[in-house]
Image 1 (cartoon, rainbow, N blue to C red):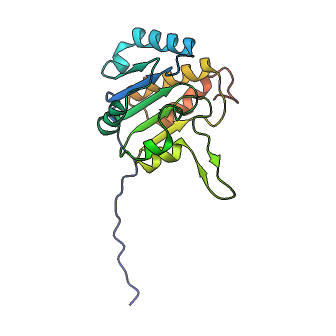
Image 2 (image 1 turned 30 degrees about the horizontal axis):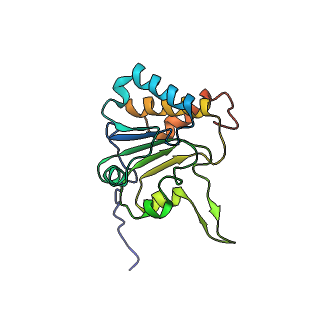
Image 3 (image 1 turned 90 degrees about the vertical axis):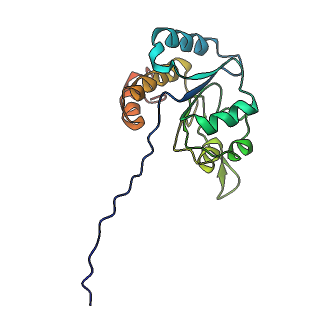
Length: 182
C-alpha cells in the first residue's frame, strides 16, 4: 500500500542571541588609533547599546578570559587587524565549545587559506568547529572608516531586534566604497 501520511515537522534553523551578553576586543595590536577613537566615541554616544558588554581595548584578553567568553557570552566583536589569529590561534579556538555570534571586523578576517587542492582552513572554520552560531567577517582588505561604521550600524540594528542578515543588507549602503567594503 502506497498510502503514506506525511506528518509535517517544525524545525528551527536559527539561534537567538542575547545582544546584551557581548564582549569586545578593540585594537588589540594597539596600532589602529582611529578605530579605537571611533569605538570609544560610539560607546560614549550610545551607551545603552553595549552598556552590559565588557571587553578590552589595546590588548588581547587572557586565556582565562577567552574561555569565559566562549562559556558565557552570545556575541564576540573583534575589531583589529585580520581575524585575531595572531593573538589566539585557530587551534586554540577549536578547543572551545560555544554558540557565539562572532563578528570579525578586520581585513581579510574571513579569508580561508588553501592546504592544497581540496582543503582550506582559517578562523571561520575554527569558530564553526567549536559550534559558533554565526560568523561575519571580511574576505579581503577593507578601509577602517567603512568597516567601523558598518560595525556600529550592525550593533544598533541587532539591539533594535533586526536579524544580522537584514542589518548587513541595509548597512552595506552606508559604506563609501560600496563595491569594496559593502
